[in-house]
Length: 423
Picture (cartoon, one colour):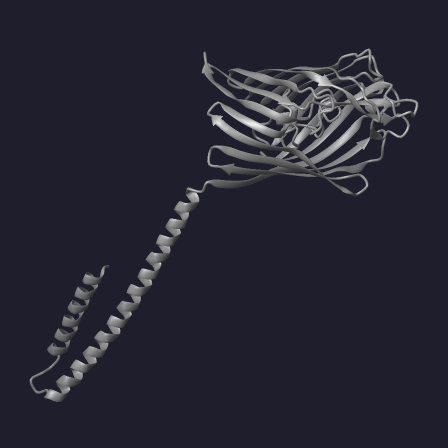
């Protein structure tokens, strides 16, 4: 109701009240009685006008509040920056032949996203873990600036999960992994590189011939090698392992480049091929007796570093099938303390089936890890049952049948329990 309509309504109301009052005046009434009735009607009119004015004021205040909220909502919709928190957490229990049963995992991994329009995103994941001695370890799993160059390409700079293969970059979080552990050779210190520090171009290709494809190409500092000190002179006698954890150092000064190409020929099926090449040098040693890793007080020449991989994923109905192969090869170097090279190979095949009527999922996985050191080699069958409270919340029960060198940790069977939640 606007001001003019309100004034008109008041006049109509006043006229009606006066008419009603006048209609009650009879011929015998005197002038004083008539004046008293008019005064009473005027008081009623003033009270009504006051009430109407209060209603007008309240309505105006409400309209002002609505306008303010609408304006603020518009500003929020047009915000240049958006902040988003995601992540996952896991709690696990392990009981194997080599040690006593224990709660072996308490992990929280928050993931932060800061988006600027549709042009740039900062993404970072922390890994917060409770160590066996009760101390808390905080690590930076990755941190990248992503610049979206167009609909099919993003430039990624910083520390990122290795795009070699599928498991490390897409499947390792507890609520995504179908089993409580990584396949043999695909965890830390295995055959597959974990992360890299450098630059990456990744994205997808426009559909062609009914197929889709994705890609990732990167250049980075590459890994450094860990040597084994057998005689206590702080000089490597053999290559113990490959430290491919996204280091900010580059001792050999030679960058590693590589990537992955994925093809999706039909819905639910993806085939991938990965490759990386460069150089790496032995920069640290681990003591054979104390198992302590220390920087080496020596200079060792760089040698060739090659990684190749293949992966497959197929999903249809309740079935989810995966397989992956990875090989890391370190070349020999005659002028090095360790002239021989070394090769790590790992592969796994996994099948999972989700029941349609119940929140249950069965998982079967076979994995084979072959390293230069016999006590690390392992063949593993893993059988698990998962209960899904929600798509992102799962409780797992699994048993691993491990076959390795007698007396080594790789030969111990394990019972595993885990609760994991992604958000």
